[in-house]
Image (tube, rainbow, N blue to C red; front, side, top):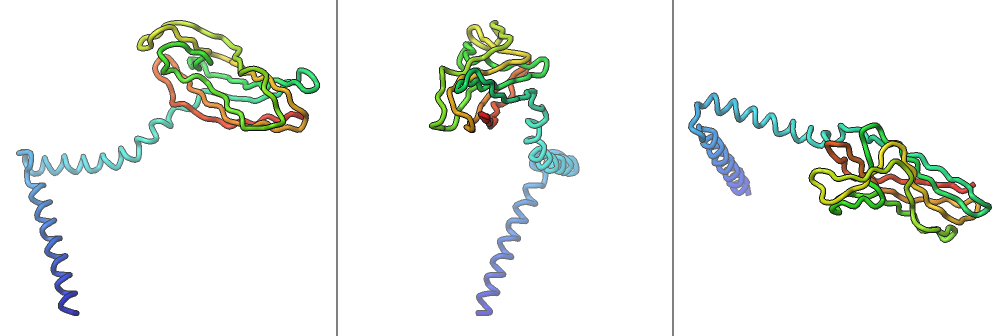
Length: 191
């Protein structure tokens, strides 16, 4: 039994020695440059890999979301209400229209309501705001977007004491880029 352990240990030592020899041969001037220059390049490369792996995910987080969302319930009658999604965009940013046109790559805002048998929807969500219809380089056809303050309104029929929840998704852009689509939860309470 002791001999077996010794053999296993010797085998492992043998394989480690081979691995060391292979690595040292690889580091011996594989690109035909002086050894010190190659080693300096290798050290720089090995230093940069972890730095990039740590820093790369944070680049997407550098741009703060240029939107502010507020949610309001407006009473129209005893059982009719408007659910209003107030959007305030920072200057220079825009959001695609509910019907953006273009080549189909524009991500229009979408509103998904959780199922609730106590509410009845009247129509679809409509938008109110400063719409611009134009052409843009790199996009086929005319596109429509909104900037500044925009409201999205959903009309419903419901009784008091109902809580309405869901999620909405949107994408905002400026004249240089579009941010990745973002999802936000919402809650409306009929009081």
